[in-house]
Length: 311
Image: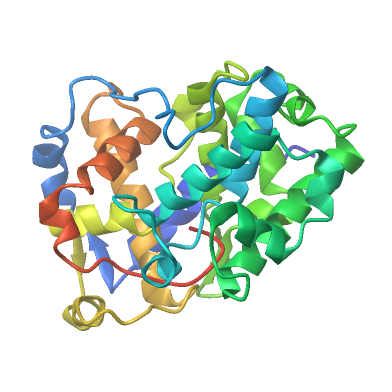
């Protein structure tokens, strides 16, 4: 029996949620005009060497991408961690991991499988008692266990198992607990698999392999892209939800409004990609909006926050 690929699962479920949403509604009338504000072509720079390890051999680079994307979550905790000067939460974590790979090399799969919160805290210069750090350690242990048990202890073997397909790599990673990302809405599972999909895109950026089919991936549902779409008027929020976000209230992960925010962003980006005539794929639009979110206009306003292991 064939299994529906991860991007198609996400695309279908998010369209269904968007069709029923009441707290976060995609303004279809805004799509064409907003699409015209997007770049003419994809702008996907190479990883910044200050925060991303990209100079090692293929095995080390594969290990870095899998480790970084396994812990590419925690946005709801960012205000509570120790950030590096001039760095966001994400780039603080990425820089710490990069420095570890440069100073001591990649962890082996066996080392990852035994990693403790104290080990992660030392690498990232964080409090070992912070709840996020044990979540990071658990995700990294899961990666190490899978690489050890299923791929002969070789990180590049994980990439090779995808046989050159971005979608196949997303499918493979989505089966790991470290990359799990499925919510429930009206008793129906709603898969997002943000990090499983972004890992496939990141493999292409950092060079351990060239994976085809990246245009089939969906947007990578987090909290920043919905924020950008909300500020720009593409995602219209219920006033009560907007007030909660403005007040800095944490949203419950898996709550209807939090699912609608993520699903609405994914679906809006599908519509935007179609409005460009396919000139920009969803992953490229996601990157453009994520970068746009670094501008002062967006940073000056509170974004939705939720503490979870999805984003």
